[in-house]
Image (tube, rainbow, N blue to C red; front, side):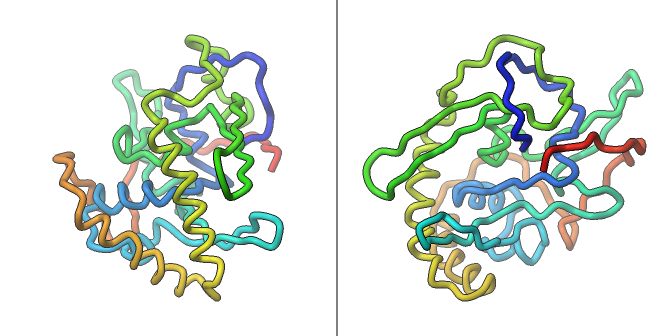
Length: 230
């Protein structure tokens, strides 16, 4: 997401879809992965890798620590975009970008946007959080619209936020010894597949992606993406 900070925390999504395209990095919590597996009606978390919608990337945590972080793998053709972005046309003929995971299986970072949480974690005890308002992309048309957004954890996401911190602590300790992505996937599956199998069904409609994680969509009109600071 853009590093430009806004002093006017007002936002109302216009469904432009720009935050779901281009060089975005969408990091996933382990709970996000269980939601995706159930939403796609898969058998194992490793099926997310097989479908090409999630990859593991080794990231530094500082002080010699690292972690294999799951990320959404954006499709590259015909446009660089999230595999779960559905391009649509409204009744007035206007293009709009819709999230096919909204609202129940949406990744935590996407559900929080345009709020961003910076966490200082010593590895023990409570973490220190700083909440800021970050436009999803430079020139986002939703900025400045709607009601003021409190710069704090949304009430409906607090349990997921707390779980993310606990999971990241545990996963960073466990995955740091994995020499490559494949071994990290094996470890992740050993930790999550039992949880996925034991959770009750949500009763929500299942989203079925064809092989390769591609979903047909209405082509978006070509336009250059705005210059972004990353």
